[in-house]
Image (cartoon, rainbow, N blue to C red; front, side):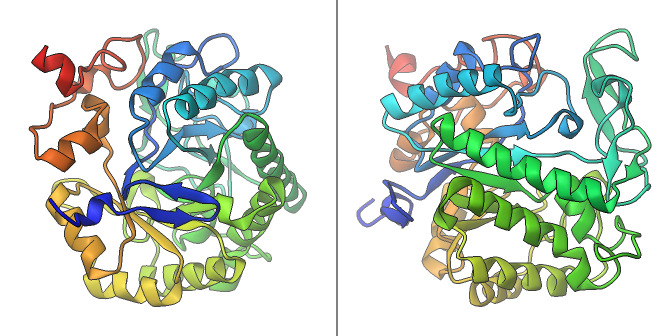
Length: 371
C-alpha cells in the first residue's frame, strides 16, 4: 500500500522510528533465577521483533517491593543490568529501538513474592478479587492467588520510591535502553495514587486531583533526571480501564489534567492503554481528540487494534503510533505481515507466563513457514 500510514517514519526525540508499529510491554515471566535477571532467551525474543518502530520491554520492577509476579525481571542490581544489556545489544544489532518499562506494582503483589513483607500502596485498600502470579510458595504449584492486603506508604517512603524510579532510569540508560516508559496504568502503583477510588489519603498525595497527580508529577521529574532527556521518557496511562481494581470517578477530567501536566514536561510520548476485554466500553473518539489537544506530543494507543483500525487512527490524527500486543506474541515479523496483509498466527495462552523457549521464541516468521 503506497503511503501506508503504518509505514511512515516518525521522529521521537533523537530516534527515528521507521514505522508506526509498537510492540507494547507484555509480562512473560521468564527471567533467570535466582535474581530475576534478563537472559539470552529474552534477548532472542526481543531481537526477533526488532522490526517494530519501537519496542517497550515487559515491566521491569524498580525495587524489591515493586515486584508483583513470579519470574519477572528487575532493574536494580548489577546482575539485572548486565542481563538487560544482552537484550538491548541484541535488539540494536537487529536494527531495533527499545525502551524499558519501569514498574512498581504497589498493592498488586503477594507476601510470598516480597520475602514475607506486606505490599505497599497509596492507601491500605486491598484489590479484592485481583490475582497475581506466584511461583508456588503459597499454593504449592505456580499459579494465580489473591493479592495480599497492602499498607499505605508514609510520606518519607514515597520520597524513597521516587528515588528508586530515578535510579532505575539511570540503570536503564546504563544498560543500553533508548529510553524508559513509566507504567502508570492498569492498576499499578502510580495508578493507585491517581484514581480516586484507590486513593483514600488525606495528606498532600490524596483528596484533590492536584494531590492525586502529585506522585505522577514527582516520578516523571525523577525519570527525566535519570535519563537526562525528557524525550526519552514515555508514560503509560489507562484512563478508562478498571483492570486490577483501579477506578476513577471522573476519568476524563483526571486524565486530561494528567496529559496537560505531562505536556508541560515535554515527555517523549503518552501511551494510552484502552480497555481491551470483550465487553469493555469503547474509549470515545471525542475523548481521544481532547487528549490530543491537551498533549501535543507523540500519542500511542493500544487495545485490540487491527491494521485497518490503526491506519484509521493515525489518519484521523489522534494517534501517532499504535501498539499491537497479542499479535506480536505469535508473529515475530508482525510489521512485515501487516505491510503485506499476510495472515496472522494465533498465540497459545498456555505458554504466556513462565516456561522456556516454547511459546516465546519458537513462533515462526513467514519466511520460515514458506520454507
